[in-house]
View 1 (cartoon, rainbow, N blue to C red):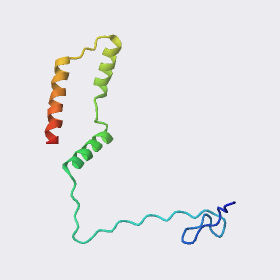
View 2: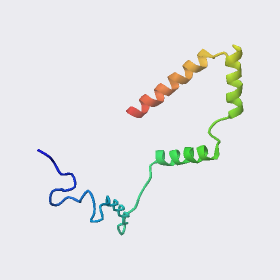
View 3: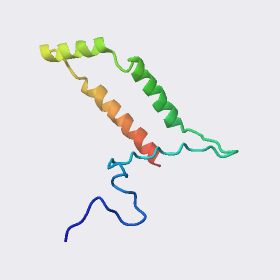
View 4: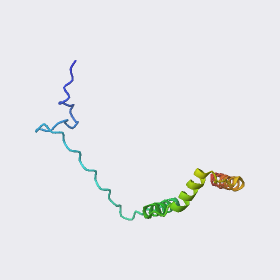
Length: 101
């Protein structure tokens, strides 16, 4: 059985218009505000907006410090303070577990 792809079932848009061209998609309708409606953003949303602006400004990290660390790693002089890392991991775990309750 051969299916003619140029013809479609009733109620469906045609694959090609009368000129043999694919029809362009219709733009989505703009959302309409409802009278008396309000939008409230969460604290997390505000924080994300702040981080986004920092990223756009290029203030997200200290490039000079990153270069120093890279150099120390290459030179074999980079050392990790295991106690500080452990303390921060534990503090982070407490923070995460505290938010779960």
